[in-house]
Length: 79
Image (cartoon, rainbow, N blue to C red):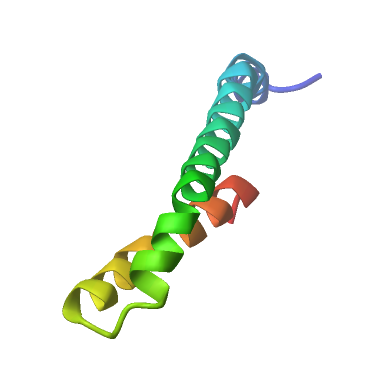
């Protein structure tokens, strides 16, 4: 028979499982919303950023823009 501490830990994990599942669903939903927003703005982004000459604004945009998507993707994967 399991000890009292083990039993308590098992009960805690069982109680926490729905919250973990809800958190994963919210992370997936936020990834979908972020990708949808990116796709909506992709035409303007290509026109105004990628074909524009290199300026401080372009560098700052790229510096801020791409780490966000990378972090969001890896957070969804659980890394």
